[in-house]
Length: 350
Image (tube, rainbow, N blue to C red):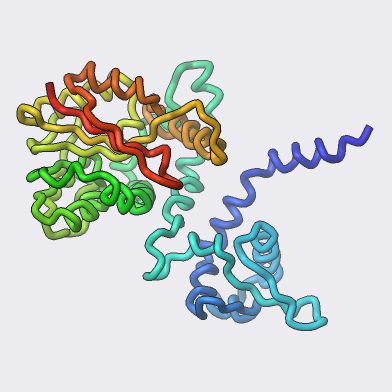
């Protein structure tokens, strides 16, 4: 009996970490940007790429092996220029466009990759089995404190996480403001867990009459840029939330268990006037088959390794959570395409 196919699949599973870490090495070497700088459809030789590296004597043999592997993975393409096997040029495929950070590429995924491949965050995955056996939180098991407390003590990790969250926000906010019109009558809007103010920046650009309050932990909002129409306020959502007509969350409540979410939403209830609204942009799980279902499952596992008992919730779970916290869901708005799992849940204070 031929087991070669089964063995190959098993080996691919074992070495599934390799593409991420090899791509990380290429990004840290700035290779996608080196090629992108040469032009939209440019390709460069090994020597031309090496000449842009921050060292006088890079190991060209290692560099060639990295580029060859990422070409096989579809990040770069190779062009053989002559009969000489070493006469190869490397260019960027469409997939590579997500992995360079030049000024004309705001939707790049570099911050997300650098966060997920960071040694501090990867350490959590080594404790995933203990979450099952001990009902613990993987990040706390690895580091003795949760991600947010760790970030307060380690500005570099905090910056990596904050940059990654801003990247994900950029990818979704244009569709949110184009598909959801619930901000039009809001005068003051608090974005809880707003980080650098990226989400609010998109909102106030479309609705400049809004006074935005970017609310997050003090060490995070200290790094937020000054944006017209936005006030940066530091604090803890577990203590209190600034008063406003409406309160916005994007991918925040997913990080917390039911008890913590009820505490956060309870503070929202106190901060809002009569008929004030909570606007939640979060994933809603479904049972329907989707072509990218594996990505959804991975995202849910990330919640186990990084969050504090957080999880993705179904529509009924969201409604139950909001109702228990004193809100009534009045509208759920879906987004098209890649963000079809992300929904806007609008709930009114009752």
